[in-house]
Length: 392
Image (tube, rainbow, N blue to C red; front, side, top):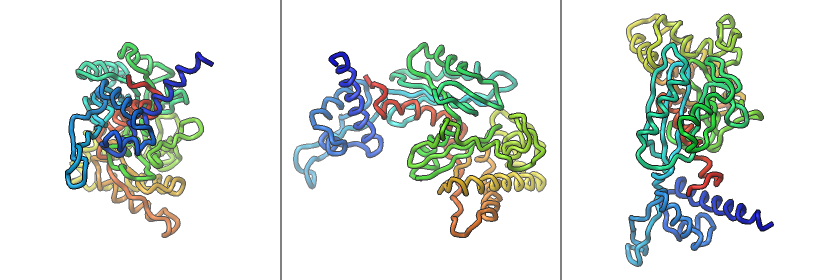
């Protein structure tokens, strides 16, 4: 039994530390006494935890505020979560672009970047971007890294099971990032839609929404589902592969090898083919060019009307199944704006079976093409907030 005690003590210390960190992140600054009330921990325990967090530049106590009513009494010293010393690295590997975000524990983006991928394997481009952003971080310790990919990831949060639009098999992605980071922190892999949905619920258009659905807008189409701040992953972790529902043009060829998939009608390549325009460096730039042309080209507007209708058709099915209060459209949909939102709303209204079933609010993502990388960075830090990863 004696050999188990240090491990148990360490586990309890991490758990207590995570309680303090979550309180500061979710409820804001507080004095040590207030933290003890919030968490139910003893004041002495909070004091030890705060001291340790200050040593690794995770919290700050330099400010002071009046402690008594009306400004009288001994001043309090609020503990503020700065998170500067603890960092998460989020990366996205996609067909035609890669992204990276370094996020600190306080939720601030320290470094970010996106690069286009043209006619090459995107993984070497991602590895080079990862090297670049890590070099730009002057201080702080990486506690975790996650790579978002457009496909299925097995339950080990590492092995890529299927990516229909790019070659990223098995553990090649995780191993490549581990080599770049030289073992500085654990590396995991996650679905891009899940990562982007998580980012929107913490930083973007879905903040405060209890039941939100995020729809990617890249070459592939996927969904991330967030309920009460948590991702819905499904039995095998594969929930959200909505791009391969049989919706839209039944003759359209999909990257998965079948015909009639939703993404074959509303994915980036399908949209560009419908309007007869070329692909540019990123999905957003491509869509922005289309939106600009739609202002004076009725044929392009008509094609986008059809696109929005097909978006709404799929969302009607998802709404009937999942009942979200909010749907966030990301990726290239953002640049198209009302060209997609308007017909999608009308299609939703036509397809929902009962007036009692309210149409979910449709919003555009506010996080741009780095949404998935930002969410991956947040998820890379989750081990600290859960007590699974030590902070010192």
